[in-house]
Length: 300
Image 1 (cartoon, rainbow, N blue to C red):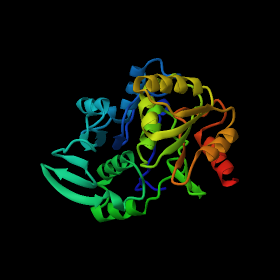
Image 2: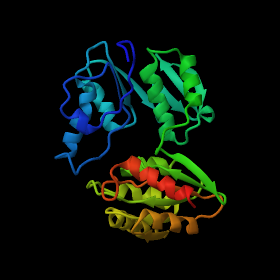
Image 3: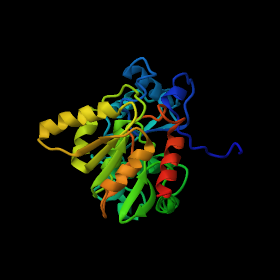
Image 4: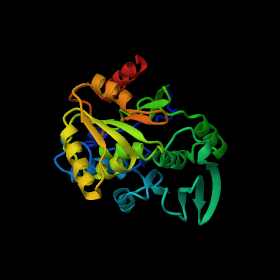
C-alpha cells in the first residue's frame, strides 16, 4: 500500500468505542439494537457508532441513512459535510432509490444513475447499500466507473450468498444475519416462500420485531441455539395475534436443520440460513458458521 491508496474498512462498535480519530469519508447505513450483551446500554452502543464521524473536519464527508431516525439525527452532530441516501424519501440532495431507479439528487435536480434490474444483488437493503456506496465514492471516481463496478459486483461470502439449487430449491447462506434487523432484510429480499433456519448465541436482543416478517414470508421455521426459544415465543405471540400458524421446529445441530429443511422445501422455495443471532454458542464466528452450513449443503 502507498499513501495514495484507499482502504474500505468496516468498523464494529467495539473498535469504535475508544477511537479519537475519524476517517475522511464515513458511512453509517443504519443503527438498531445490537451487541447489548457487551455494551452497558443501547445509548453506549449508539455513542460508539457515532465516533466514526465525531472527529471529522469540515472538509470530510459522512454518509447517513435518512430513513433511520437515529442516523438522520446524527447529522446535527456532524462536523463534516453530510450526504444522505434514502429508499423512502425523494430528497432534494443526496442519492435515492425511486421505485426501481437509483438517482442522484442535487438541489432538486434528479439524475438517473441506474435501474435496479442491472444490480446482481437482491433486496431493497442492497439497493440502499448501493446508494450509500455511490454517495461515499462520488468525490473519488466518476459516475461511469461507479456504474461499471456496481453492475459487476456479485456480493460477498455469507451475505445472502447463493450456494446451489437442489431439486428446484435454492439455498442461501446469510450467516452475517447476526441480529433480527439483518434477518428481516434478508426475508424481504425474496418473493418466493421461504424455509428459514435461524437461532444462535443470545446477545440479549428483542425478537418481537422479527415475528411478523417471519409470518409474512416463511412457510417453515427451523430453530437452533440459545435464541431458539426466544424466537419461538415471539412468533407464537404473533401467530395468536394474527390467527395464523406456520410449521416450527427446534433442532440441536446445524446438520439436523439442513436435513429437516430439505424435507420441508418444495420446488420453487428458498432455504435461507439467516440466524438473527450471533454464532458464539456453537462456532468461533459467523464466517466459520457460514462455511459449515455451505459444507453441509454442498454434501447433500
